[in-house]
Image (cartoon, rainbow, N blue to C red; front, side, top):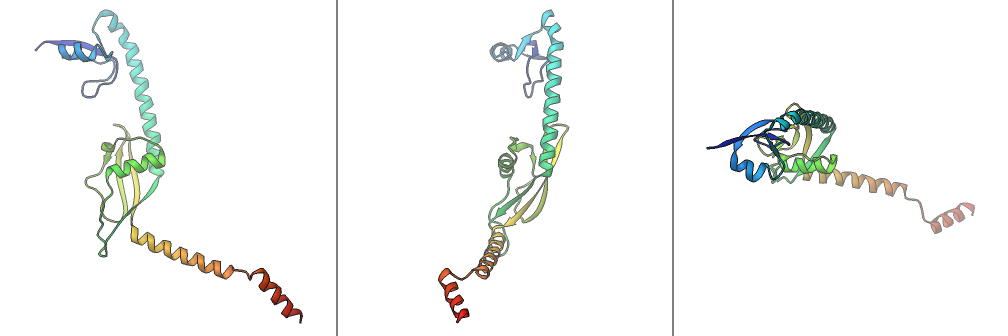
Length: 189
């Protein structure tokens, strides 16, 4: 099987990062890597340019590391509440999946992360506080703490606060304009 040496100009998953010298099959090099500008042939001139590519790679890796650390701090501070429908026995009808967590992070924090970076052995089906790990970078992991609550529990709390609010509103209710006039007349007579 004929192989050829190439210098990569950008990160290619499963093959290497920019400035890496790799051996690939000639057909892959000829039909994909070279026409798309993802690699250059190994020549004396290209070997001199490898330092510039290594500097570009170091800058990209430093930028990715800083972004991952910043996102890790924001995720560590975030507190989310997920609600699940539960039956009378407390068994959940749904679950919180990596996709749900990814969507919540995207909506709340405005950060795009891959759902495969969320370490979740199984979907979460029980209420309470949960802590999961998110692998943001090969050097950076973040811990996300979130609550899972029953939708029935939240409805009960909402009903309690609603009834308390209406009770306070009735206590604060002032007599109407005409009632005040009648009461003032009675007091003066």
